[in-house]
Length: 111
Image 1 (cartoon, rainbow, N blue to C red):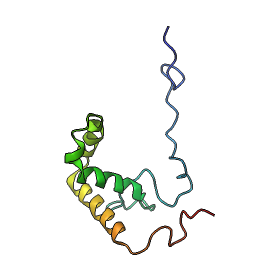
Image 2 (image 1 turned 90 degrees about the horizontal axis):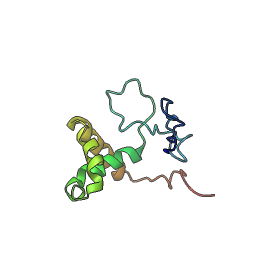
Image 3 (image 1 turned 45 degrees about the vertical axis):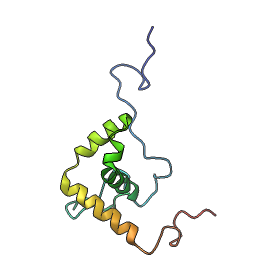
């Protein structure tokens, strides 16, 4: 006999996706890949981890494509248009070039 799926059963919706641990009260929007001038309705800046992730994948695509388990992730990367990928790269590059860090600003420091 088959067991019931984790969503509670056939025909029932899956529970809503929750923000990652520690992101609930963050000033960054964890659902936004990159904030661009075209995002006029979005007041929350994109989470830096999102654009670091996609920038890393784009920069290291040739090395990662030989890993079979990366095929699904790289297929999602292919769905991002070139203009947005360029914006992601510029945003990540700008963040890395800043002289300040989260720790120097008191963000994320352990008490």
